[in-house]
Amino acid sequence: DGGITQSPKYLFRKEGQNVTLSCEQNLNHDAMYWYRQDPGQGLRLIYYSQIVNDFQKGDIAEGYSVSREKKESFPLTVTSAQKNPTAFYLCASYHRVGSTEAFFGQGTRLTVV
Amino acid sequence: DAKTTQPNSMESNEEEPVHLPCNHSTISGTDYIHWYRQLPSQGPEYVIHGLTSNVNNRMASLAIAEDRKSSTLILHRATLRDAAVYYCILRPPTRITQGGSEKLVFGKGTKLTVNP
Image (cartoon, rainbow over all chains, first blue to last red; front, side, top):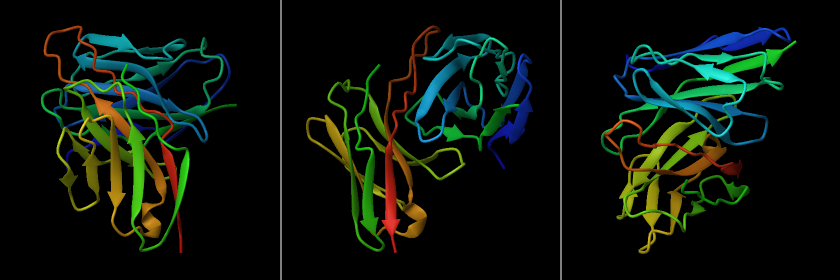
């Protein structure tokens, strides 16, 4: 079955450590997105990519980094420079052509301990 | 970025219709209107989308104002499983050339509570 997979579902990080969240899709989608969601809040855009080897900063990119070496994969690294990384992280993808819907992963809940 | 405005929360009774409004006064002529919903601790899921005409699918109906500056998601008979946060977003047109901006911007959405 086609879909978008995020892993791990739960992640614990010590302060000062970098951590990478995985996002993989087998839908042949061009565009991929990373969002951050804090309790009771909406989704805020971190980074997005429309084609391989290209990505753009979203509204809250500071303290995060991404890569897009393969069409299927868009990993997000939360660096030690992100001062408040505890949040729910969501990855999404869609076909750029047409008006098709976006598909979301089930999210990764990151907690700094 | 084109923005949308939604009420923070709405309440409904089970088996009654629900009308969830969304204002998007700065919508461009080519933006699609998309609706998603998010259940607790899950990723959002697609509900419906439209451009100019009203749309129906198995989940809901979408009514789009003639001037396209507002839209309404209609759940014909709310169930307890419809309790979620509903997001209205604008999907910009595809830009095939590299460097085009296709930001998908989500607001805070409307939290729908369904009473039994």
